[in-house]
Image (cartoon, rainbow, N blue to C red; front, side, top):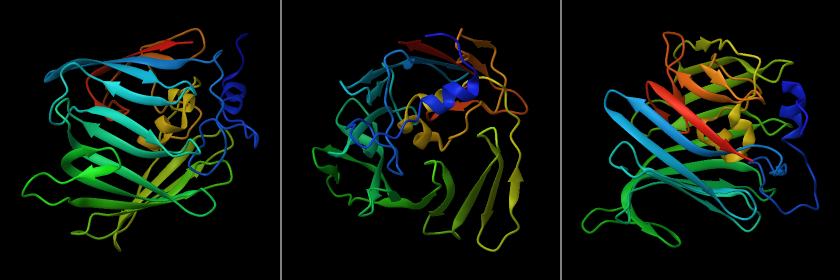
Length: 263
């Protein structure tokens, strides 16, 4: 594949084709995981308190089914992904190797197959058809979130309910470059806090699959940081935390994250 501009690559990763049965974005558009494009294969995180390597596996459609770490533990679980018959993500499970989960995020769609809400459970047993309670401990939903997406399947609003605190609302504003130039958050009737990310001109790896976008709620074309290194197609391969950017990617928070790709 010839090297294209970032804008063209970002646009070409999202193609709506009604006859294709591949993975659907939360708002219903189809993502075609073209084998010419890169897939995330490995995530290597380093910090003072953690060093681990996560291996990403995919199904035949190109949808991620797991991120597995050899040292998974509390605060650093594996991730398992489940889908419905339409190929839409239904569950993201923060799992341990012993059949228990740390968190279980379950997504609910409306009659038009658009993602509307989720529920997050904490600590239980991994069941074939959903989370199961531990003996003498009922299932506990720790929060729910309502989602709003625009016509391009990008998140524009989330309303999080933690039950014991006011609703927490986040609004996302996109510019012509396809980046969330302003992210405004507020709790209850408090004044909003506005964040204005500064982007590079490279390819955001979240665009490689809608599950990655949903995990981090990052639908921008570019990255809100300057990476230490990029590959030939502009994807970051090493990210280091800085004063302006607290490194986080696919629920990893570390001093450095190295990303390996395959295609």
